[in-house]
Structures are given as structure tokens and as C-alpha cells.
Amino acid sequence: MTAADKVIAVHDLTKRFGDRTVVDHVSIDVSRGEILGFLGPNGSGKTTTIRMLCGLLEADDGSGTCLGFDVRTQSDAIKRQVGYMTQRFSLYEDLSIAENLDFVARVYGLDRRQQRVAETLDRLGLGARRAQLAGTLSGGWKQRLALAACIMHEPRLLLLDEPTAGVDPKARRDFWDQIHALAAEGLTVLVSTHYMDEAERCHRIAYIAYGRLLTEGTVAEVIGRAGLATWTVTGRRLLGLARRLEQAPGVDLIASFGMALHVCGTDAQALAATLAPLAAEPGITVAPAATTLEDVFIHLMNRSQDNFQ
Image 1 (tube, one colour):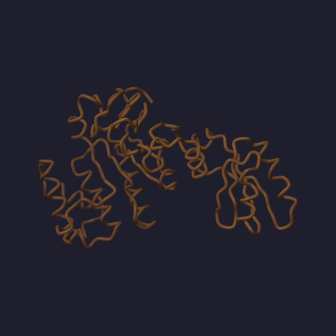
Image 2 (cartoon, one colour):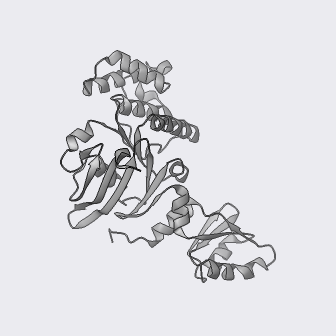
Image 3 (cartoon, one colour):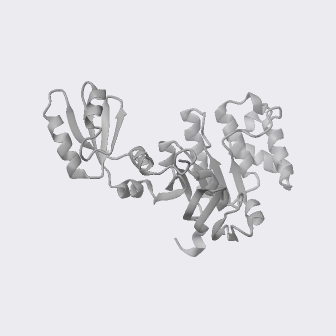
């Protein structure tokens, strides 16, 4: 990534509320047209970080630029070029889809309002529902309307805070198809999510736990960097097997996946030695497996210190 490609380049961003540091010296670079996913437990500082990156919240320390503007001194210039989609639907439910978009166009002082509304309706597949009241829409259609409102003023940066909470899998997939189409046109996207399949749709991910950036990169890079060896254990009485393995050498993480256990550890040799005797027991199968992003997520979360303690 060259300097010219960077839409966001920040270093050591820090935010405190009282005596608690909720974002602790976070550094991130994001290029034009990139989709960066923020993962982390609730209260980890994901949303606070995103808001500082785009000038919606003033940092207490650190420096950098967003869209070519200083994140600490030129926040107003940044905000004019940002689209922000919150988790909770925030448009007027007693207005139609088209009326909501016309209202948003007025708020932004956009010219050619009717044309812009029509183009946005067509782009997001909302044209046939333009007269429908927003309050009667399903979760997926509300989400699509919210996205339409975010991109009407043609922002260069789009922020998505848990954007698909409460919508069905088909609507989530359609939504991500739209996000990738926007990114392909050069729009940069920052998204906060808890869904592993959504994180895997991002170009890169950043894992934040209790204010600290623990790892970032492509999904493959993050999984590889975690250094986890993973095995599946199948058989009867999985709960009993899990309890037997909880304190065993080399076992850092145990999770149930259907009729199998995912057993992970950073000491591959110790883990293999622990699991070898199980393979000899009747009715139990032990086999190496690919480490998943969820395995890494839980492993990093278990290693993190809660800054609210």
C-alpha cells in the first residue's frame, strides 16, 4: 500500500473515559476501496475506534489522517465525506421509502434531489417499494433503505456498525453483495461485526479486545498468525470428553460443533500427545482439522484482559 492509496493512516489513537482507557494506542492503515472488518467482544472499543478514525469522536492521543484530513483537527471536513449506518434503524417509520430519501437529500443540501432519489432507489432495488411506509418493511428491507440513505451524498468512506443484526441470511448475503459492489467502485468501508462469516467477507480484519489491537490482516494471515493447531474429536458422550480434556496438556480451547469437538492449542506436539490415547478408544475418532476464524476469535478473547475489571 503506497501513501497515495491510503484513505486512513492513524497511529497510536487513544481514548479515555474518566480513568478507563477504552482504546489504547491503536494504529491502522486502510486503502481506497478496501473493506476492513472490526472484530472483538462487546465493549472492546470497536465502535469508539471507528468513530475516532472518521472524526466523529475526538481522540485523546495519537495522530493520523482520514481522507487526507487530520483526524484531530479537521473532523468537520472528514464528516462531510462519511456515510454512517448504525445498528438501530433511525429513519422515519411513518414516511415512505422515497420520502425518507428525499428528507435525507434535503438534510445534505443535495442538488437534483428527485434524480438522486430515483437513482438511489434503482441502485438498491427499492424502486418498486418507493411508496411503502418504512415502518412496514422487514428487517432486510429496512437495512437496504438505511444503506441507501448512507450513500445518497456519495461519501468516500462508509461506516457500518453491526449492520446486519436481526436480518435473515438471504438479506445478509444481498447486503454484502451491495457492499462489495460499492467497494469495487472505490468506496472504502469499515464494518463492525460479530458474525464470523461476515468477517470472512472483508478484505482484511482487525481484532480489538478491550481497547487493544491484537492482530490484523487477511483472514488467512490472522488464522496463520494465531499459531493454533486444531483437531476434531467425534464420538459419544462429548460432554464427558470435553471435561476430560479441559485441563489436559496442550489444550487451550474446546468448542462443540454439532457432533464433534474442536480442540485447539498453541503447543501442537503437546496437543497431539494428549489426543493420541483417545484415538485408541472404541467409538472415538480423532483427526486434524483446519483452524477457523471463530477458533482464533475465542482464543484471542480468552487471552485478553478485560479493562472493565
